Every structure is written in structure tokens, then in C-alpha cells.
Image (cartoon, rainbow over all chains, first blue to last red):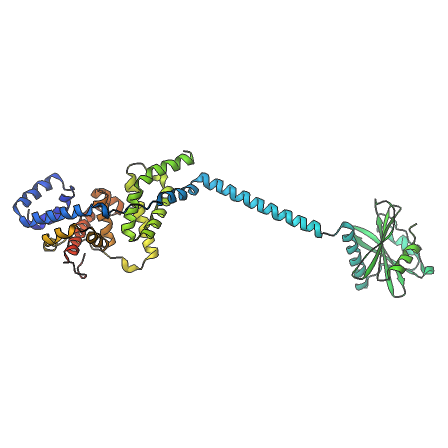
Length: 249
Length: 177
């Protein structure tokens, strides 16, 4: 073995990684070669110096606890419970939002009668705007009443009130409260009065004036299994006169 | 296995080697903050892959993950000039000789040794740490560092030569490691 070969094996020898044959040959050379012997001792000393305790970094005190805290959520159990917690929180959140929405809807939702009143006014306005006051134009109640036959599943009371200053103009089919209803059209001067009529299970009730909607006055009553809604831009007093004339009975 | 037992088993496997993991990460990353990040990330990876651990050598297994995590971290956080492309060629005899008296006087200076190790290219440094501080065999080092045993030997030899030269002040920046 020459020096070139020896230098390649010195580190492995110092590390105890040289095979038996290599050890024998190298040791023989080191006995004979002071330079390689010195190189070997240098390697040994360097190795020893690298094992000094002060070169070894010890994990900081908090690291282990930090890691343990990190591990927990990583395990599936925690993951699952985490998902459930999240799910529960989300569900609770959604429930709260739903409740709040329902509550606000309940608080702001108009009553069924208010809704219907709004619907009636809309229908009244539509009849005026679309120039569609009536499907059957007749001041003759005996013409108007039969016209509804076959178009409705009930027979609305029809009367001409021309004598009272509210001439019957005609009749029309309309759709309110999710059903087909009869609409009678009367005039007072240039004002139009729509009377909407359909069957009801409500008990008879005296004419009641509702709060005006969009400037239109509304009077509602029930009689004999029919519900009546009178809508007009006519003032409340005259509209009530009309209702009295139309007659709750 | 119950998840709680699995975690317990994992902690019993990994936590005894936390100092070794931190030491390697600290030497590779160069500072405490990054070392802790690397160890933390490595341990989470280890937990994830714990099912693949066969129970042979927990320390080597963990240090392999620490090392790989470090290189991932290095790629994401460092400028590429910290990478030194190494050629593992055979050393010339004359390069191995150093002034033994100066060397021996410096070897007792822990700070000087520390600086010398810190200045090693990272590919040399990791092998020195695994060999001298962890006492890993060449075979174990080869597995952890994912290089052939011959490369481990070659890098160790060159790392030691460079350490000696740095300690004796013979190392010139232009020298190939």
C-alpha cells in the first residue's frame, strides 16, 4: 500500500468502517509512514473535537410541548371532532341566521289581510292602467250577472246603483287570493270603483275601512258566504256611501 | 389502532429523538427560528407518514425526514447561491496534509470548530453531523442523505480536509472543497 491509497482509507479507518483486510494493510503502512500516521492522528483529533458537547444543539425547552400541541389536531380523532365542532358551530350559526331571518320576516311580513289589500289595490290599478276595467261592458246587471256564469264557480251579487250615483259599468274576471274572483266596475263621476267578490268561509262582518294603500281607499266586508272588497280613488266617505248603497245585504 | 394510541406510539417513537432532530435542523438551517420551523414541519410529516415506519431505526427515520424537510425549506426560502454543486472526485494526497501543531491547538477551541463546521457546504455539513454527532454508520448516512456509501466516504474525507484547513487558516476561499 502506498501513501495515495492509504490517504483514501484513513478516514474510513478512523471511523471504524474499514473492512478487515483494509485494516491490516493500512495499519502496516501507518507503522512505516510517519506522514500518513500524522494524517490519521489529525483525523482522530478532529473527530474527537467534533464530539464536544458544546457543539451539540439541544432542542429548546418549549419545542416538545409545541409539537405535542401540533400533533393533537393532526390525529384523525381530533380532526373528526374538529370537523364536528366546526359543523356544530356552522349549524348553530345557520340556525341563528335562519331564526333571525324568520323573526324579521314575521315582524316585517304584512298580515294576510294587508297582503290581500295590497293585492287588491294592485289589481285595481292594473285594471285602470291596462284599460281593462271590464270584460263585459254593461250597465245592465241582468247582462253582467249571467256573464259570470260558467266563468266562476260562484254567482256574485250584481246590482246597478246608477240611481245612487254609482252606475254599473261592467264586470271582469280577476285573480286574487289564489283564485278567480268577480270584479264589478262602478263609476262615480270620473272615479272608478272596483268591487271584488269571491266566496269565503269568513263570518259576516260589517264594512271596515282599511288604511289607504298608494292613495286608494279600501273597504272590506263579508256577507252570506261572500267576501267583498271595494277599492277606489274615491274619498273614503263617498266610498262608504257606495258600500252602504251596494248593500251589505 | 385507535387514533389516540397511534399518536401515543408516534410520540414515544419520535420525541426521544427530538434533540437529534433539532441539532441536525439547527446545523443545517443555521439559526434557531428556522431550525424550529423545520423540526415542526418534519414532525408533522413524520406523523403523517408514521404508518410507513417499520420500527427499525426511529432516529434515522426521523432525521431523514428532517433532512428532506430542510431541503424543501431551503428551496423555498433561500437564494440559489447557497447551493454548491459538488463533484465527488478523489482527493490528491498533498491536499490532506496540514500543519498538525496548529490544528491541534485549534481543535480545543469549540467556537473555532463551530465556525469551521458552519462554513462547510451544507452537503458536507450534514454528513459530518450525522457521522460525528449522531455516530451514524456510513450505511445509515447513505440512507439518510440518499447518496451511495462511496459518496459518503468521499464527502467525509473532503469535509475533514476542509475543516482542518479552515482551522489552521490554510483554507483559501478559492479552494475546491
